[in-house]
Image (cartoon, rainbow, N blue to C red; front, top):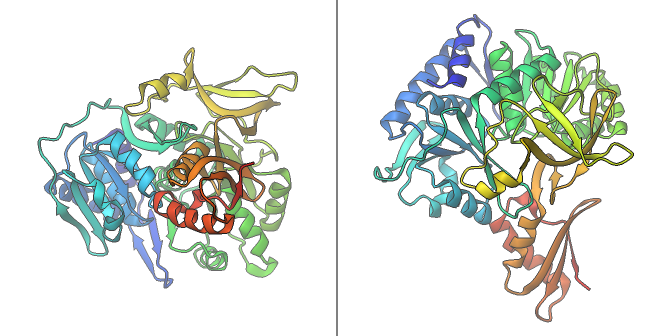
Length: 465
């Protein structure tokens, strides 16, 4: 049993009648999972995974949609001391090639209908498929395949970007997950029996910490919904009396536009916001529309959270005071106090899996270089912009060099440069043959759809001059 699984299991014993999980289907039907059923589910799934060939220290990418089963499988993998690899269902050829090549996993757990997407990367790998009937062994792996040497404190490997043009597997410790849940709860001040709505992908560390571990460790109920339609979500909030929602600012802004004063969302207490910039104007609009605390914070895949606003003390335009045990300094700041945000914590493993050079380049004198620019303002951290060659699209980190690289994979594109514009990604391309920009744009979008997650496809293509 891993430390994280042990902590969650110990807390579940004190839950009583409060259900830790409620899953709402597309038809509105609810599946309620009691603490006892949840505990039994984790234990039985761990035994099932062992019977299907999962072993200690196996690296196991999880290609699973949001569900109660996701959480059960996640904890069951930890119970057998395997290491989940957190990846997105949206990833396609270029991303999958890099992730499978870097991690060389021993096993994969995937939705059955996702096998067609990842099938070419599963040679010699134990493949376990998930569907409504449970887990099924699709393929036994090569038992001679090397089990990697990974430090015992590693809980998961989460892929992220720093502008290199390919993903990096950040090794996240059990202590980091537990610390993150504790300091987020310090800011949220949620109470036993209250409910947290889960709408962000569970593969994101922000969701894992804020929507799963915080509720599990502090006796709140996670309510998982299978819709992103705001009006349906509003109905679920009303019917289930949801107190908290954790999401990115873009989702809260959408809620704000479609919200009507008569929607009776009186149960809401706070929005927990992160993953993107929240402007002072958007802060005021959302806070006023819903009459709630709006707790914006800052973190990275490598360490979440770094800072967060706290209930009753939140300030617009900031990402809050630093979390306990997090040191921060602003490197090479000018007269305005703005510079690169450097952090140091006792819980950061500080290593990208099998990426020694990139790990070294991310650190200086024991400090982690976030690749983000910010400043301090009366004890609060203010995020200004990204320094590394990345941007955020609806809370998703996009490596601009990776997108440029993907476009250059088209043999007719001689040159490509991608930047973030006012309405999304803009690609400037050099075309090697006589073809209209409209024709080439159509071809490139079809090509990129096969090679990148959909949110990375540029909104606009222009010709390099």
